[in-house]
Image (cartoon, rainbow, N blue to C red):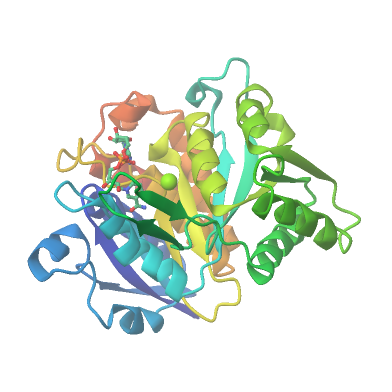
Length: 356
Ligand code: NAI
Ligand code: MG
């Protein structure tokens, strides 16, 4: 009997709307499989909490989360609270405290109707982007000098440690080897003459341990072009924190939009809980209307199940997502349908249950 303790942080805007549907999927799996059970503990953190209490999460929040196996997060961010506060004081704080240094973002086309690219099918767009998740430009290193003065200068330093760079690149090689796919590194060694020259060097060094893995290395600007013109060139992709953030939104753009994009923040050693979340934000423009697409959040559930060795269920969830895409009427408006968030969730559970 496998028991998984999940901390829920539904967060702001559409976060709670989509997380509720993901939780229903997990509850359905619990019903269908007597060998798995989940417990859910909800934390009310986020921007509303900030406006009331002056912080995004409780001071002992990290200690309280530590005892869980996984964190399932909706989204944070809301008008009235500066985005850098909501991001740094909750999301990045958790990623850092729990050393979730791997960000796994699948960029897979589920159906040709979902891509704006001409004549591209599921075979052409099927990659796993592995984004460095602990340092780079998001390390928080820098300075703000002479604030408000004419000589004002700001520095946002890219931090690339040997440990941090090696471990993400090694993780990517392992994944490429395990899944028998090519590995592409995306960097920018021509212009970033310290950080990205170092990145490229480490990519080559670590590669000596993986002579069986075919590799490619692209500059980030060229890679952006190829994502659109030749996405089939990419299978497993490894890149830095900033580039990965941007490239995966581009990835979302060629596979059906943010309503379908998911990302797992992984601590591979399982020393700390890993965190599963849709890539999208709190979408204030549609919050409260019941039209948010819950599929990205449900895909996160699939990643969570894979991470805990329940690949059978991870696959069942993903297969059910694929089978839903054909039923446009049962999808949310962002995918051309008329259904509400909970209607999509309910239909999903119905289909998953039928399948089993
Ligand atoms: P966003 O992802 O919230 O929304 C961008 C656009 O995509 C909007 O038009 C929205 O309606 C649409 N969209 C997003 N998710 C959708 C879904 N599930 N179904 C249907 N349509 C969907 O990004 P935006 O507008 O840049 O940011 C809004 C807030 O979210 C900001 O406060 C930002 O800081 C925060 N944010 C939080 C993230 C997180 O918690 N991981 C990630 C990105 C943004
Ligand atoms: Mg992003």
